Amino acid sequence: MEHHNNFLVYILVLFKYIHCSDYQPPPKPDEIPHPKDLFEAYYKCLERKNAWYLNMKDKSEAKLIQEGHTLKLDCNICISPAHDINSYTWEWKVKRGEDIVEKPVILKEKTRFLTDEKTLVIKGVQIEDAGDYFCLRNNEYEAVYRLDVVLKERRVQVVESGDQGRQPKNSQRLDEHNLWLFTSWSSWTRCNHCDKLGQRRRIGICTVKKINSSLEVLPIDAPVLAEYPEGVPCRSTLIPMYLSNLPVVLARRSETMMGYCKIPCPTIPPPRNITDDTGAVIETVNEAEGFYSLRDHKDGKPTFPPLVKRQSMYLERGKRVYLECPHEKSTEELVHWQNGTLTLNPRIIRKISRGRVRIDTQNRLHIRRLQPWDEKAYSCWISGKHIATIKIIVTEVPVRNLKDYIAMAGFAVFILVFCCICVSICKGRNKKTAQ
Image (cartoon, rainbow, N blue to C red; front, side, top):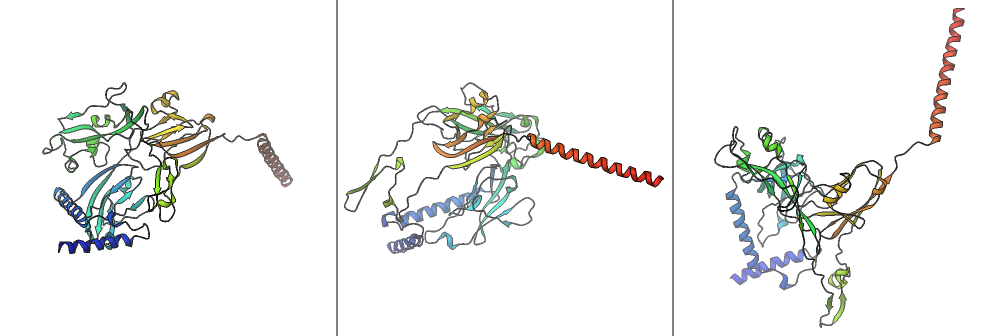
């Protein structure tokens, strides 16, 4: 009986693969997962989901994200291997502060969309995106999120412990308020160079939480701290005004820690031999140098790496500009900028330019008072990959030439003569009337 059920599930899974063959070739039999493995993963998913429901007080999960970053909300779905995810009706709804009822989330192709797993992705989150989000399957709630968007703030740059420079702040106990003030650190970014000294970065957000979770905050309790036992960012809109305005909270800034790193470069894969059914080598390709084989793809079209984005900006001399690398914001990636072939070190470039050129904590390149020598191609790189090149072309502020001034002076003389003639005519008429 068990073998019979496995055979039926195998046929269903194979049918699902063949059903998608318009987009990709059907897999080989040994590439299809075993039904037992599929069901074990399905039951583990159900166990995790049940544990999640038991741990949630009001069946909603609190989410905090900084303004401008990318948000991903999982639908927490567990689909049986015998069913297709697209056989259900899926919908995301949102209820913001001013809304009375839930409204469907308006999807946009590039900034607000659903993945194949029905995960909601919002790129460049804004303050107005805060609210309650609901994932519905056949009009039944699968997941509920309470989202708060943290305002952007200027962070203080500190160095890794042991290095020379501004050190990160220590945690602070506010026993009179039953509060613990500390810095919540993200993981380190990847090193921006390999086989030589590079840099990495991590973000530290000023965070506040209760010292004793069973006691109230003094002098007035803040229930939101009970909902977020791991802490709430100091600049969050959820924090009551009287709490965020405490002098010690106002004085504590979020931090960006810069550190040095050195990692080996990844090994370059050797040339690959492609053989026929008899094992004879029919082609050798070196993908490390950008050569691909058409035999690896059924449609004869290999998958090429994304193209480098290019942009030109025409700006007047003396203006201010900031350049942003067009990539998905992530704390795991550290962007480094180049001016031609010269790498711009965030620590050094600001000192050399006396603050005129700097790279902020969001990897944006700022240039104040544009000068003709700033007219160059600026490229941004992530993990050794060239992402974009932005060409700045500095133009002079338009100055009126001599012909323009002569024309304006002639027009002014014409108006003056015309006014004098009108006044003379009016005086002549008045004399005749008096006689």
